[in-house]
Every structure is written in C-alpha cells, then in structure tokens.
Amino acid sequence: MEMRFLGRSGLEVSVFGFGTMTFSDGEGRFGGVGATRGEDARRQIDLCIDAGVTLFDTADVYAAGRSEEILGEALGAKRKNVVVATKAFGRMGRGAHDTGLSRRHLIDACDASLKRLGTDWIDLYQVHSFDALVPIAETLRALDDLVTAGKVRYIGCSNYAGWQLMKATAAAERLGTERFIGQQIQYSLMVRDAEEELLPCGVDQGIGALIWSPLAQGFLSGKFRGEGTDADQRLMLNNGLKLYDTPRGAAVVDTLFEIAAEHPGASPSQVALNWLLARPGVSTVLIGARSDEQLADNLAAATWALSTEEVAQLDKASQTAMHYPNSHHRLFTLERNPQLFPRYKD
Image (tube, rainbow, N blue to C red; front, top):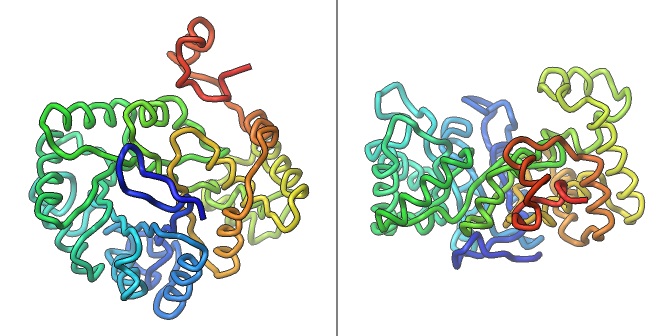
C-alpha cells in the first residue's frame, strides 16, 4: 500500500487508515454505529495490517471510551509497528472540566486515553473540534507540553473551519509551540465543501488531510441505488441520507457504477475511495466497516487507481456551485490562484 507523509512532517501513514468508531459493545454515545469487539476486532485489525494499513484512528468519545480499549486490546504487541491516532474534546463526564480544550481537560483526557489504549504514547493526538471558550494559546501550550512529556508525538485537529485552522497555525508559529500536522475532515464526492477553504489552507500550510466519511455514510457504495429494499430505504431516511437522494446524487452513483464496470472486480465504493486519493492535500482516507467483507472490499481500492479521465468524469458528475470569494477568484483571478481545485477549472 502506498505511504504518504502527513502534511509537512516526518510521520508516514498508509493512504488508507482504519477508523474504529465501530469498535464498541453497542452502548454509549456512538455505540450504535457498530458492536465490533474481541476476536472480531482482532481479525479486522489483522486484515488491515496484512493489506498494508499502518494508521488506526479512534476517539475518547467513541462508545464512551470502549473504542480505545478495544483497539488497544486488538493491537496488542502489534502496537509498536503502527500509528495510533485518537482525539479529545467531547464530554466524558459531568464535571465542568470534562469537555473542551482547556489545559485541565486535555491533560486529563490524554492520560485517560493512554490508559484505555494500553500504550505509553499516542502518535497523533487530535483536538476533535474548535473550542471558542478557551484561548488557542492555552490549548496549543497544553498540547506542546504533552509532546515534551513524550505522551504525544504529533498533534492535529478535526472539524475546524478554515479561519480556525489558520488561526491555530499562526498562533503556533507565534508561540513557538508544536503545530498541527493533520486535519481530520469530512470529504467525499457528495460533500465537497472542504475544497473551499480547508484543503487549500492545508496545502499552503503543510497540513495533511485525514478524510472521514469518504463514502458519505454508505451512500456512495450504491446500496441505496434505485428502489432498493424496504429496510435499506428506511435506513437511508433515518440516517438523513435523503439529503443525497437528488439528481446530483443519482448522477454520481451512476458514474461510480460505470467506472467500476471498467475495472474487473472493482466496486463503486472502491471508485469513490480512489477519487479521494487523487485530490490535492489528502494524505490518508479513513475507512470503517461493520463486516469483514465490507472491509476487504474497501481495502482492495489500494490495488488500483483511476485514470485522469475517470477523475475528471467524477469531478463533473459531483460538481457543486462555488461560493464567494472563490467564485470571484474563479471569474477574475484564476491564473493567480492555483489553489483552486479542479472543479473550478474549465
């Protein structure tokens, strides 16, 4: 499997990482996403490692900490050979300091994650969201202290807006602290908002993108195509996937099937995952799975790549309207703004 550096850092990660939100007992916040644990979790970890995956991502709020525990148990002695990423921000108790990005919470949260993961260090420690109530300097200095203490190797963020990402980057430079090397963001053929600010900022500042929900909650797998089963249609409605059930969504899925048909053994999911690997600024794509079959299919995307023409075909099918100021740049200053993405070009 191809390896890429995460942003402008020395941390190498596989182009596909494994997201372990499905690791749980089926309880707690996000516990309903999946209930993979024990031998099933160990088998999925082995499937990933055998395919070349080196990055495993979790968060303290996934299944109220159980995801971290199950991941740590499943990795066992293999932990030293992989990159473990986790996140902090979400509420983990009823106390005033059991949430957010204060020094108090971050240090406590890191210690708790280390214990649950059964490890001495976290390779990539990410803040799970932006905290407007805590000074960015306090957050960055706390993260810097965790790196100095050897508990954390690198730091990143998740779900930031473009201005928040740039604010944190500039603050780290001003303060002389560790800076974010990665941003974990939502991005897919159905959700291309990150192309407006986040990905251009990441390319410019050397912050690699880790992609979550690359299949738009399963919509891009094609399982909801057409009428589908009653169960699938109810699931689609309950998950809010009706937002994607539009002429644009249908055109994207049709294109995925057309391209998949040109690659023996390929699935629409693999096509959608490969499209992401061709995007500027993307370091790794996080895949998840409820079953071994689903995981094996997603991992197979690493064995082939889309042609330039196929990427352009998907660009066109999934294109959305530009927003200001990119719309202005597109009309009047495109030759001086190469950070604008392919969907903005003729």
